[in-house]
Length: 594
Image (cartoon, rainbow, N blue to C red):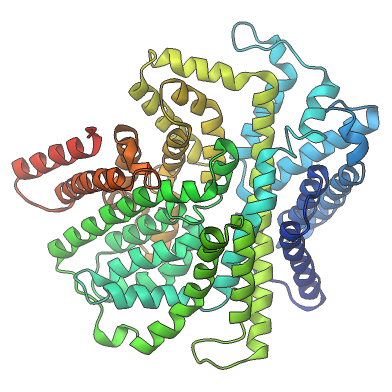
């Protein structure tokens, strides 16, 4: 697994990494306030801050030494691009001389290795295959060959122009994702996470199946700022899983509840992982519009999980949290402020002041940083604040580096698709294989998302799938945002769907249960993940909350009823004819247009 998750070093190394992390945070926040910075300056400097945390942090021996060399070479090449940006802009993506060719090859190789160390082999292999296609695809006969591109032009487009490493995806990572990652890290370094847990426990703890419902609420709240299923399971699961086990929940159900609830964090506004910000760039849709479009589907997902939990609670007579395990009202009121104040500032900035999301997020970061000075004891403690600030900047810089390494690698794939026209050819293949019909195209796209998402992070799977399948779906009549949300949701399937289901693996390990048993239960609880995207296509009003709130709420009511029937039929042990009828009626309600 990536070195990003390794423990922090000590001594002088700790001082260095904390200082470098602070520089990364200051750089990314500074871009928001510094006006227009040339793209071939800000984006290469972003890579400079990415490489050390991916290639050096947490490694030992040869891996560390090679990481130092690769960081020096890759960082030096990125700095050269930044310093030479004026001259490079006049080359229009064409490399001049052997030295520039070597620099381009070096940048590409370092990015591939950084992604490999961060997330493993699959995405770098996809990128390497795309690069080989770009270099040698002219020798492929038939429709999937291409006419060939001069080496200087091909590598130049990827390495010194704004169509590859420094393209629109990287812009999202630099200008938006980094800011919201810093925002989440600052909140999590303080007591916002405990505030989420307290609010969830107070709201749902006393209900039937209360511990599981607390998991759902806390994961939804926590996921709204973390956007990572794995981080969500590891953080909220550390509290909710032992609570469920202590109350007699079957381990497969406890693990499944946490995996499914945590996976929902990536579809929960405002963060949605990095996906919401990538969607802004790819669709040209304002961030606030994407938040509005994603809100009702996300609520329906958690509604379906809630109904499933209630069904299991009735079936196994699962109790709520005891009074002694629920937080006092005073604790709820105090700790909730640690996330309500920054969130209120975020929304006030976007909707009242009308500033950009990243500017509003900076205001929230400053508020969250001020709140690090105190805690639930309402005592000012400078030592505690310093420790929390160090944790916040280190966590932020490491997460920015992890996401950045993924996006840089994915940018190579997108660059090759654009240079060679392969994306258009795959779109044509989807259209011909589906006979020009929408629903077969949707199923082909969903299958591709599942396969790719098994070993590639959600955001990368979404970017690659939507680049090749998105045009086909829009050509068949889907709105661009509708197509992007459909692909993004199905890129999430692999978090709970075997054979590779990351959130399930983590939850099963934490609870000590067979992962396959947890996965099968998670698929039952998370049935909304499979059905809601189809419901969005059949009922496009569902994502039109901003434009037609009445129609959107009516569509949500219909689909929510259908999801409740489907979930009930899968969980409860009733007569077969009754469950079959509920399942059929539920599917009809979800998939039949109004």
